[in-house]
Image 1 (cartoon, rainbow, N blue to C red):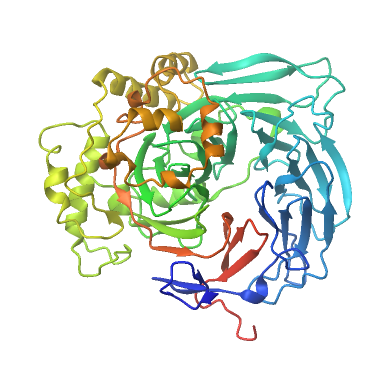
Image 2 (cartoon, rainbow, N blue to C red; image 1 turned 90 degrees about the horizontal axis):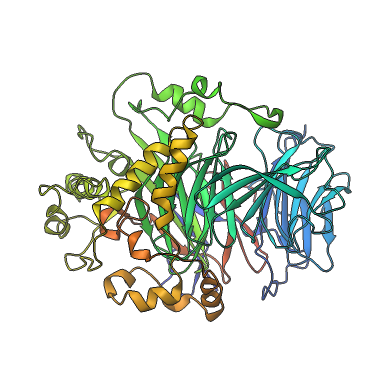
Length: 606
């Protein structure tokens, strides 16, 4: 059943794969699952999720793993690449009736060998705070479902806080809680704190402080996932309406937006320095968005179905030289912003990289590694290299660190295309750049930047320059942070209000061009999913007004990444991808959590 490497049959499950760093190997003895190791019947159940925490155990084995399978929740010592998993001795096991765990998150600040704080979200809307080491249940939030009756889609502790946590629901609402406060015995009453286009934030009206502290209503349809920036100051949210929305979390203001090429967005993550966001979803693509420029800088096509998880590999991402452009504001610039609810910030990877990158004005030599897994049971790894990140900078040397699929292909060809594509993305539609895309595409080598064939020019009508200009203004205004929020709100009101989601039904009726469908697996979308998408009936405008703008560039207007590797690694859809120092961890809907040792990290006694 399993193939040791590159098996010829498409249905073979791969147990190893090779990148430029070496060979990643599946450690079969390190597989975690339910104790009986029987594949879980996943029909109608919530996705399997995995959370890690290190409890600083003196024995040197402080890693702990939590995962949910159906109605069950398990908590084990995680031995990783060191020793085989012992499934007969879970530290804690819980079986729930009437509801299922959907997501969970450890508080890394408060974790010790004697106690950990674990939040667990449920399909009926409740959130439980438990200590699986002490085997205690501390509190239950939204117990009577007075705050929200819909499924919890994501729960996370607020970075740097021991008591604040954020919860999102399939209703499209997010709630900020404090573990010290109660939820009250009646439904909360709210008053508006901040309002913008397609989002609003409310505070709870009550005589005494109660949960939730804040209620966010974001977009239309379910809010599928959110992620805090490495410094904890910004929040990226992806919704079923296909929008990525990035907020300044403390100032409660919209920083920027992005629209999927098609369908809902399901997952989101930040680069280690906070400069880039990757999102994935129902368009089968991974989309790279620049936090600084508020625009799409690349898309990646490798999956044959919906992308369920995206994650950056902090241990493979490398910065080799200094960067002339800093993050949009240093740590000092942010200190004058109000920090609500007494939050204490921790130093982040971004601040260290920011200081390192601002030493002089030489171009940066940087490679970001990220990965994705999807419902097609495939794992893809991607490299985001400097020819994509900085297409306008002169190239003074050969890039040996760029993962080129064909070693003999000249990097200059790829650079020319990238420049032309990026100029078009920026709205720079000068005659010098426009014709270059198709005329040069036939000579583009198959490397990290995937070529576009000469016959794939889109026939969709170009949107007016007024709309594009408005979008530019929106992004510029929204980068102002906490200053000039009135200007920002008015810009968003005039710009983003024109854009709405695109349902599957509308897509099939309005766009018959084969070139738009060439990268999408419509056959994988079930009728149930179609019905779910069509429930979003609040679409107010033609989706073509979004396509071709900065919110959603056309496929030929941005570089198309090709995966470094794309391997089938499971029988059921993949739901987890986590990068650790000596391994990466994946999980599928059957309830099997797999450990892949990094090159050179396999312990010989295994």
